[in-house]
Image (cartoon, rainbow over all chains, first blue to last red; front, top):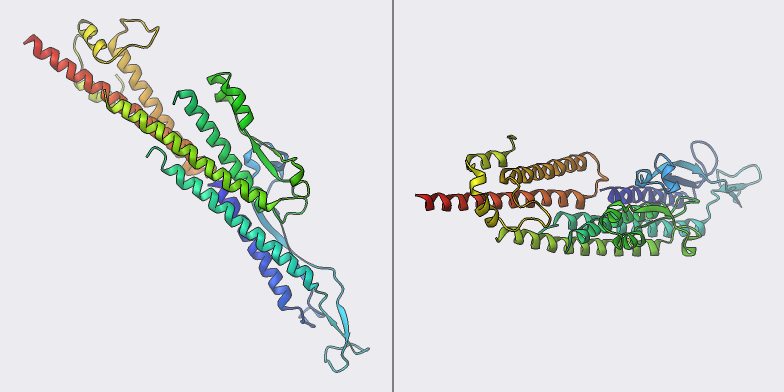
Length: 138
Length: 113
Length: 111
């Protein structure tokens, strides 16, 4: 049933978004990465799956749910803390910590959890309809 | 329950199925930047068609369009969408039940003589 | 004659002289539709009924196929079509049984 599949795609996307947020928080103090420099906060990019024609309100064939497009790093500049003793300190004794906005990450986490729950509600509602239709006539 | 009423019930079920699909789509796009919610309408056209007879009712199709309700102006309102999903599911179940009773009735009429 | 299973069953109990038995049989199977001619061939009526059964069965079959292959096919439509198909078949079987019963009664009377 299409409604269920659409909701499932939403569950998948939000779950993966939560993982990215969790990873950001876990790496809030990672000052050096294999690429050099401090960890950069990542954002999951998502949107409608495949074609966009469905959004002009033609018919239901354009409704395909959502998908992950990829990830991109946030532009936030690292914040410097003066720690001359730290092996990662630069010439000035400053250590660059990841520019992670904790408040923003928490807000996004809440928003994402809510979206996840909402997708679950929609999926269950659709499944109820499916199950009820099988009993028709009896 | 007349044949016209059965067809109306089926058309309403069609509309409610579409609405479930569109609501799932809206919720799935909760975090899509710039997404405009959609909605399904069929009740008004079904009401008008009911007064015009069987052909008009048969021609009714659910319509998917952008939701211009000011409540949805700044993106997907998850609470309203969830409410729509629940209500749609309940109405669908009710119509299935009603159609079922009509079908049982018809089956009994055939069985007896 | 079609090879539809219901037709085959009906054929094994075929009335040999339908027109002679017409009045009793039309009376036994219930009132005709308003506006329909009063002496339509009875076999024609059965044949039309069987066509309708076949049509509904084919329609239900097509919907089931569509449902299997395409997840966006609404289940309520498929199940409704299957139920309609079953009910029209039951209706025809009831008619068949009534015809057979009445035919047997009439045959008994003649002996």
